[in-house]
Length: 229
Image (tube, rainbow, N blue to C red):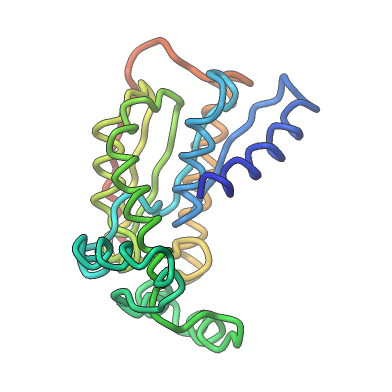
């Protein structure tokens, strides 16, 4: 994941350098939220006007959490077990997509991986989630985190913990009651439009408030919203 984050950050910074005075936001969804947080932690202070996380992977749900003993035993095989599809699977697609028409399209994708998670995938995700618990307090940039309360893929508790532990003076957490994991692609149109409108309003306010730089000072603007369908 560090390699993914480093490559993405290199590209984003190359674009950022072309327009240094423009507001710039990082956006990450699901596992991309983990990559986004890694990119932020690698960035110089003031690089980003704000961060947006949609159902980020900061904590592994209990029904997908790998056994530490199993991971240790697989590790004793010196990499031979890395590609084994042998980890718990909670049938994520059905818990990610709420709209039945969109679910049928996504579930019928012949390129979609349908096996159990591989050993090295879960080892890396478990390592990352542990790492994030020690780094939440280093986040000072303004951020918006959105999460569905019925998300069966990533845990809303991870978003709550991130909100509580971060050092940002301007932070917002919106929990959408009854929504699933894929808030933009997988919800009915009225729900996804609502999420996008909330993101747009948040961005517009930060552009007006901060312009192109990160805000470190000033009064706290922390806010938690319970959005009811």
